[in-house]
View 1 (tube, rainbow, N blue to C red):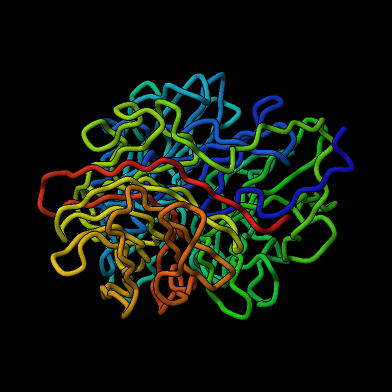
View 2: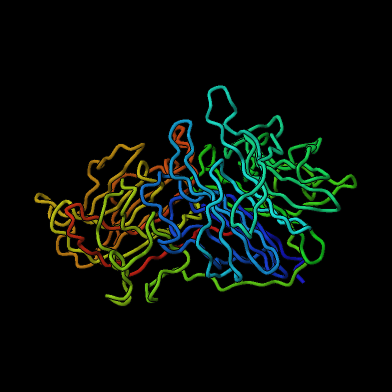
Length: 531
């Protein structure tokens, strides 16, 4: 059994927010948000709550998800994964606009008989607010819950949690819309997770917003419509009062009961840079054991309201999965599950792993500022100490053609080590930065690459310090540009209010429209820290 094993939090490292956890038999699943990155939704699988692997990315075709033009930190928000009578149900929100007081969004339902898919085409249900959750009651009825967004002047934007019955026969919502919860004094009530135990309906809510005041609060009722009473000792979880805690922004939970009657709660959190309220790795997913009190409320095992970085694993047989290799040589015909593309699927018109076997070929398209047709393949930055290395073969002919390695938060904040060409410097490797939307080429951040057939590019991350390097042979490296601040690539940077995290990207641009291609030989990700 696994009793001596421990869970190291976060269990899903790097940008993996809005965890929705589910157990089906001996299998555990967690669905997380993907926002503007494609494919949409990431579902992780475990059999011991210690080891996890990606098992499904349901919105994996352009016919299922069109993210072109969606704003950064828009797209797929807070998926909710449930199961009933042999069918998996997945609720998703697609946010297509988030300007000013408005949220232009749409809630969809997908189903599958196998977690790996294929998944049905999205069925539209409503647009009244985000964080939808589909509850399956004992009598066979199904109920959709979501927070209600209220844009009106003088109103609480988070207008409470509403509920409406879902009819599988009609494929639509039916009957009246009921408001069943408005939250506690913490405010900003969202993320409903409804479950039933011992005749009580329990409503686990995210409160306090996704930032430093984030929390999870539990309420209960004898009837599904309410009224719901709140745990008198709320919140169940928060780190709002412990700014030195290593797992900040803790909240937005869901719970499962193991085969042995143990209870665990998933939550989201963020690890900050030392001494700074910035979290460039984004919001991550953790797990903690919880216990029931005699009067029917949940408490974190061991007491307190802050999640522990290391907790006991459940009494389940250990079930590790093979680790991803440190270096991907692009020998497969499809991208690995660690990779995402930006807003558009990895289609043959701009990406190929077969035209030159052993290489990732990217055809240059729009700029790093585009919300439409970027040629970028990215993976999450998941460690505060790591090195990232690639090698690109590329022969640009003018300044509109570029390819290379980027650390990318969004179009407004990123670092880019690129191979390009101009009439004065010829072929060269240069560092460009964009801070709060302002493009810059730091003085002296250029290295001649004339005569280089292969351009080796590297980024070294040591907490907040980022240094870029280049080499003609992968042996002798030289720095390119100054040390940069990883803190810039954070949700909170200068009041940014984003929701994602830093991605490592391989990309190509051709602003002349000729789609000049670049061939990437490998991507190496070396973590220089241990759990």
